[in-house]
Length: 430
Image (cartoon, rainbow, N blue to C red):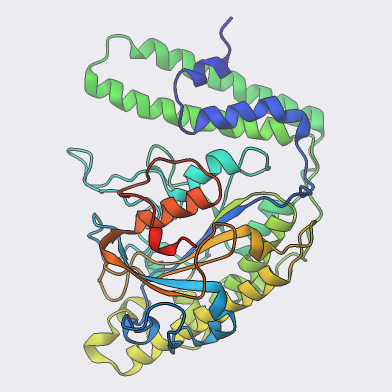
């Protein structure tokens, strides 16, 4: 009799198959960090860009001898451990309000005839298919608690997009993020198994009905139904993961639960999410994370009254808009510097640090105003074998996805290409 797993193996070979193969390793599921530290991949994204006149280093002074700029000044103590990469872009991007929708995908929103919006898989989800096999969560998506129209990120409200080009939901704010990772399920195991069996029974019925419906459909309808099948496969993957880890207790939280009063305070939310990301790595709960950071609530936490969209147009009137933009840059750099401090201070089982075993990208799809060229990009961490301590200027028209492909390869994820990549970004390889 053909099982559901075989059905899925014959239906997809991109995302679902590797995760379902992990069921064969079910007996090895563990909440303890491995003795040999794994490599992790982290993407930190923000909307509304940066102040390009005071954030980017001088392109005439490349290499290690560049002068630290005002916007990056708080990162100066880490200057030897990160690189600024200039000249990267997503050539298909044409919407100046979307800081992260296409940031990790490089997709052409008009790639599907007759549709005004299309996206493709993001770099983090490519990595999750491989790096997520032995962790409770294949990937984790952290978001701010602020409303989407204030964030400057774009539709989908996620940096993570699945193989069908659908946004991957995440945790909004630090309280939800903490509970996702560490909240204990008090439901008896027998009841959990019964509920899982019921979900599988419903899914079986849906699959049977959909397969019956498929007969005799026109080509366009079959294409729509295949998208529906992909959604079913995604549910199957989640159920498989749930079953795999059902009997493994959640790890003890290495930090205390965030106070609800932190919700809505942008600066505190960023600090807390950074701490939760550290805890996720310490407990090996996941090895792939994205964080869609707040901007509007960061401004209000700094007592800045300027609307974030208006701030991004600082070049039109200067004054308080320019001041807000520059103060925002400094605050974000301060928070990132604090995160790097903790990554370097947190020891692994073999004596190395989290910083030694992470590849981290920090940036946005927006440069400033509605400008989409020269995406602000910082790369750091020692896991991917990158040149660090450099001001790197990529050749003209280099796809941002070349950097993502290099990151994927650097952490051991095999991918021939990603998005609109033309190859790995050789300029950042040590």
